[in-house]
Amino acid sequence: MGKKYHLFEVFGIELEYMLVNKSNFKVFPKVDALFELKNGKITSDIENGTIAWSNELVAHVVELKTNGPTPTLDNLSNLFHKNIIEINSLLNSLNAALLPTAAHPLMNPITDTKLWEHSYSEVYALYNTIFNCSGHGWSNVQSTHINLPFFDDTEFEKLHAAIRIILPLIPGLCASSPILEGKNTRFKDTRLEYYKTNQKEIPEMTGLVIPEAVFTKQNYQTTIFDPINKAIKPYDTNHVLDHYFLNSRGAIARFDRNAIEIRLLDIQECPQADIAICVFIVEVLKLLIFDELTPLKNQKKWKQDTLFNILNPIIKEGENYSITNLDYLNIFNINTVSTVKEVWATLFQLTKNTIAETHHHAIETILTHGTLSTRILNALNTTFSEETIKKVYLKLATCLQENKMFIQ
Image (cartoon, rainbow, N blue to C red):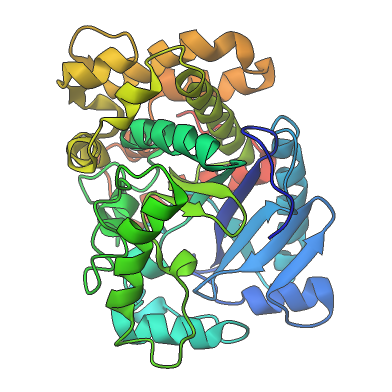
């Protein structure tokens, strides 16, 4: 275990992108070739200064992440963008490019999935044996992860309680996966709709997406890790899996590095949007943790099924869902039935002065024009032909290359 940090002392951000062929727009399962171009050989990780590159389960997804803990989020948009430009420059020689959003809109996961065949391949092969990873919930999911530190049980209690409270709202800010296989799925966050059940063979792994109301390391072990370890035992005869890798809740505790990783964020069209969202979420968590909204004892009372019942319709309706649970809204000093967009707008007014102005445009774009899913659907304008979908998503690829928001 490395150095331990206190709440909000450092951060870790991970961004996942898919590779696509420029000619036919199909996923391009050649992250190994990209790494070989950069590194001279195939590796699973590349350190590129302040940003690192790594592989994922499938061969067409590359993850960019902060190379170790960083003390500030405010400079990350430009750092990630610099790496995106470099990767696209390398991919150009392969007639490929990076594509943003949480799901490829035309991918057929049965025919197009290729697992990573190099390091960790034994782990990935076992996952494929148990769950069949040729499905949208496995091979067509790109997300943003926020890693936040805690120093001890006291800080873990506060951080876990606050994160559990805001998890249901996240799809109403971040949804970017409305199209699969050329069709409107009718879910703003289709990635999370699959996320709920893609490990149904071993339900202990994902639970109800919202983590259980546990607030110490010991309780987390007995309530979450022990059932996971027991459930996986018959499948993992060679002992290649561990509970940190297996825990798939929407926020997972990593006691090996004293951090909680938030996993419910669909990746956006550019780092400007992703980092602004991360900053916004962090500032809202601070309001909860420092008792500016509701005391810790009130946050801890919320059961996972109650929070899931708020999350679940937001996965479908995104920012337009009207929350009727007044007890939940009261946490944010809201006293009437409100849409998710209205809740986030209220929270932005509470945090705006603590958020650097460089992030305001991205947040205000989402609050004004809707989640990226909404903006994608508006751009498609009920026309779901392959030609129209490609046209819109190529514009999104341009947004990624230029680090600009997608506004139709």
